[in-house]
Image 1: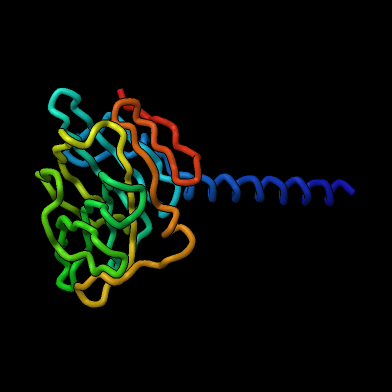
Image 2 (image 1 turned 180 degrees about the horizontal axis):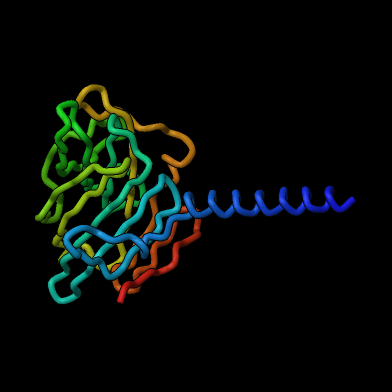
Length: 208
């Protein structure tokens, strides 16, 4: 009888440990992330789908938004994008930052205005200024860095983020179901609150 109780206790303990490890690996917290070169973003949001995180600094006096968009668990043959839509809540009209690793191993990062659903994310100028644009791919994670001049866009934004496959160095259409059609919401640059398209939201996280 004592042996059975011991076996049961061990089984329960192992199950709890397994659940804890799984929740730790999937329940990432953006506030715990450290960027290289002591780069710090005061506010961040764990986006609700596609293993994505947005870190940012917003200067109210200049209306400049400095962002780092992180997309984790992504293969080297995939593209990622983060965008602001000044006119709507969906993809069409979005002003996107796109990044992926090319077949020669180098990163490509550029701006792309989205004018239609069937898009290959062609390069083009956005409706606002973009500077300091760069990207890196490391440990199955792509990070896009940029500074955006948002003087005419207000402090409540519609944001969209996405991922898809590549054909060589050409982005292909993303999946049109599941998380790929839920990856949009609002972002309040002053409070830091990020809402989702289904009415939920992520909590504000600030770093000292």
